[in-house]
Length: 132
Image (cartoon, rainbow, N blue to C red; front, side, top):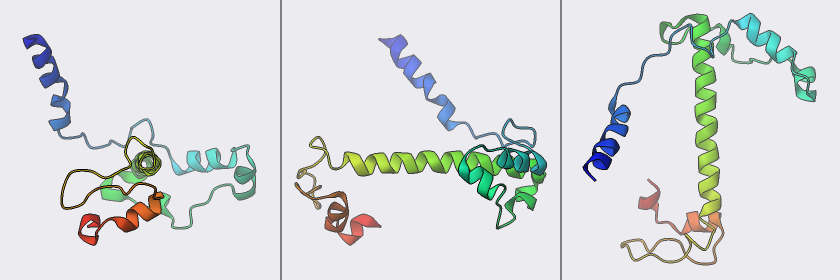
């Protein structure tokens, strides 16, 4: 039992370590020419029709002194992270309609999900101070 507790305590230790700043030589870093070539080599319809599209010129900027390749790597990491957050949010949107989660709760001051409501109606049923 003690070994299990020690193992559980040590396994979460990495969560308290400061993240390492991304370096310009990360696996996701690439030059602008490589990104343009990748976009133009995309075989689907949008890849052939649009090609490389950067309306804000983000690939020409230098975020936090990382350099051009580091900025491209940072933007790729950010896109992956935000995509995962969006997928988790959509999953939560779907889960709140299931029988496992729906129904009133015993925790006050808000009773929880109202039975028989769609997710947008459930959002509207939450008091304003609960949304802040």
